[in-house]
Image 1 (tube, helix red, strand yellow):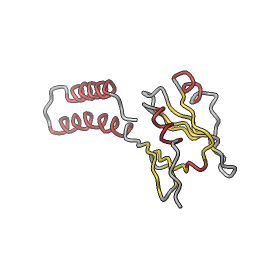
Image 2: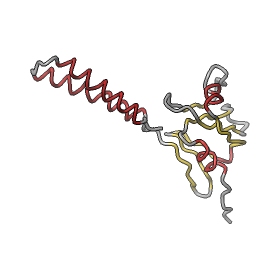
Image 3: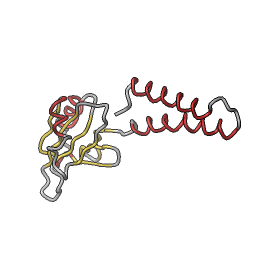
Length: 148
């Protein structure tokens, strides 16, 4: 879910312009310090927005989906479907279930819907943004070797 190159260029350009405008050529220490802060904050913000890891992990014979701090066991999953641009937009829009778990970034236009089959969990499905939702679906639905 990292910020694309165009996003980094836009953030860097805005940070440089804002830093230059906050200084206005005055080199007193507090203005230079403010310019450095104004330059660094958007860059840290861009990194923070794109830091969210999405991993499929095998833990003690059980496959889990990790999205940042959230964890989902694959034993609770009924189906996984790839959402292309229009279906993804509809899924995260007003038609979305209010209890759905959604992790999305505005610069990603595709993702997966993971429908849950757990009667004790009120969450009907997860929607997760992805640059390559096909690979994520394959990782989630790949047959796992049985452990005896």
